[in-house]
Length: 184
Image 1 (cartoon, rainbow, N blue to C red):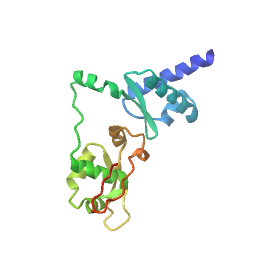
Image 2: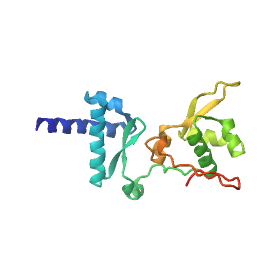
Image 3: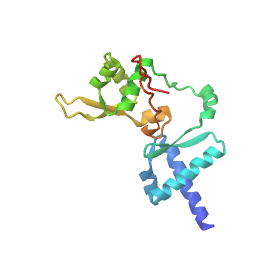
Image 4: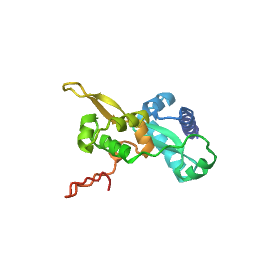
């Protein structure tokens, strides 16, 4: 019985931490907080994830990269949107989506590589994606001029609901007419 009470305390502390953070909290930080190893902490968080999902609750805990975040359940989105007066998430234009797809699948990638694939200047698209927090500088290419390499961010994962980039949809094979489709 004592172990169950202790487990409930760990769960409560993790829930409170995720709620207060309002953003991703790393597994390492959660483990340090409850003074447990990462494997045990991950098991506790997975128990919470399954409980929230199984009980059809209004909130969820999702895994993002190397951490976790508490968020609204997708089933509650329409109801919440009716009373929430804050800014709505703006959709991405086709040019931004195309540029973002190139970065997501080719990362790290230079702006020149993006422009080579798209066939048009991509300064505006890349800058807008950086402003939206979906893309960031991921380093510099070791070549003349040291061009910036771009990659996706944690916000990209959150925006599209991915745990990590391995969950990106598989690319279709290029069609014979020269057109490439990024999504199946």
